[in-house]
Every structure is written in structure tokens, then in C-alpha cells.
Image 1 (tube, one colour):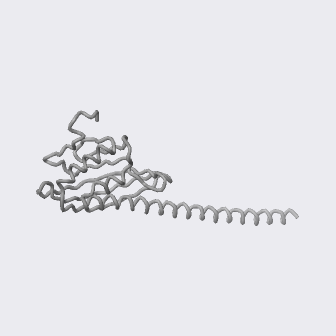
Image 2 (cartoon, one colour):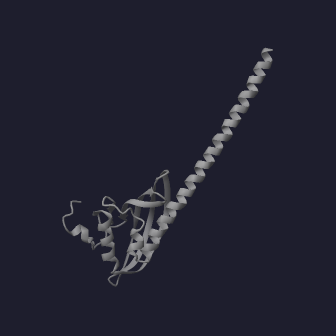
Image 3 (cartoon, helix red, strand yellow):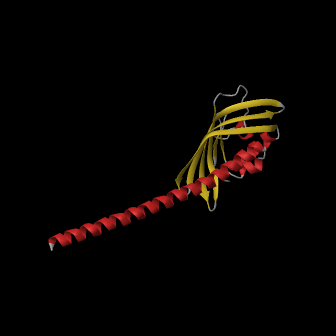
Length: 180
């Protein structure tokens, strides 16, 4: 009788662990699928940003950023711009002088940190005409994303050039003492 109970207990435990493992595998598969879906959403927002830069379209570029006075931009020139409105005005001002923009992205990395947060990092190479002069620069950038409702928005941008430009263009919001 003891052998019967031992075998019965062994069989019950075996099927219990097998069932748990299957549920665990299904939960992992669902989590991976959900993360991949969120990654595609973030990628689409990032692609819209890159497209806006190439098209020299300030409205399209700024539509991916969180429209908030605390949105923070660490600029290529070492300055910081605080606030969506300030950056929008800076972009509108500088975009009137830009044309023939080409932007190549390499090493793109998208990390989903939670259901509502992610970051993107990459290397970039940009060529453009600025006030009729050909410019080329390369660097790295990191963007912090947060999901608001259905939309992913950038809360923070940090961009660093590989080499500091010989002539630094200071955005209009940074020319006055803005407390940055």
C-alpha cells in the first residue's frame, strides 16, 4: 500500500510540475510577444523622428517628443534645452537654413524597460547643407521614451558628436540666461 501511495504521489507531482512548466513557458512567450509589439511601436515613433529630420520638418520631428516644459534635450554642442516649446522654436529657427539632409542610423538598440518605458540608442551620421555650406557629423544618441495612452513620446534626448564642431551653433533659447 505504501508503494502505491509513493507511486501515486510521484505521478501527481510529475504532472503538476509539467503543467507548471507549460504555464511558465506560455507566460514567457506572451511576455516576449508583448515586448516585441512594444518594440515595434517604439521603432515606429523613432522612424517618424528620423523621417522628420530628413525632411527638415520641425512639426514632424517635434510630434514625437512629449509636449511638456520639463522635456530635456542635451544638445550636440554641449548645451541643454529644457522644454518642448524652447526646442520647437530652436528647430523651426535652424531648419529654415537646412536642406539636403541625409541621416544614417546604425547600431540601433531598443530596450523595453516596462510596459510604459523604453530607451533607444544608436550611432548617427548626418550630412546636410546649412546656409548653403555642406556639413557632415557623426555621433551617438540616446532617447528615453514613455507611453502616454496609445502614443510613445520622447521625454529626453542626449546626443553627442564624435568630434566637436569647429563652429558651434548655439540655439536661440540658449543665448540668453535660461538657467540651464
